[in-house]
Image (cartoon, rainbow, N blue to C red; front, side, top):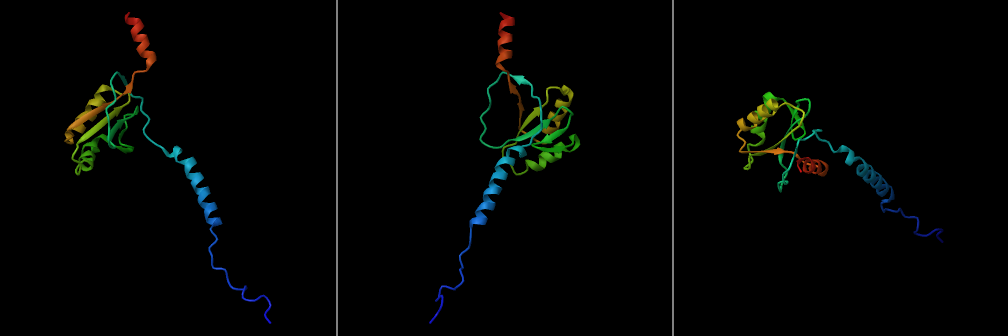
Length: 146
C-alpha cells in the first residue's frame, strides 16, 4: 500500500507572477522618467507672422543658443567644424534641406556666419525657424496703428 501515491512528482510550471511584478514596476518607472528625458537646446526664437510649413519627416536642425553655441539637432559642434559635419551628415540624403534656429538675443553677424557655413556645405534649402506672434502683440499693433 502506497502512502501519498503518485502525487509526489515535481511541478515543472514556471511561476510568472514575480516576472510580471518586475515588468510592471519597470513599465511605471519608464513612463514616469520618459518625459523628463526629453532634451533640447533652449532658444528664445524671434517672432514672425507666417504659417507653419508642413513637414513629413524629421528635419536637420542647426541651432544657435544665446551663448553662441552651435548644435546640429541636439549635438554641440564648433563653428569651424559645422561645414564638414553637415557635409558628412548629408552625404547620403537626396534632400539637402536644413532649418536654422537662432536665439533672438544673438548678433546678426553670428547668424550670417552660420548661414554662410551652411551654404558652404552645399545645402540647397535653408529654412529659418521662428515663433508665431502671440495674440497679445497682434492686438497691441492693431490699437497702436488705428
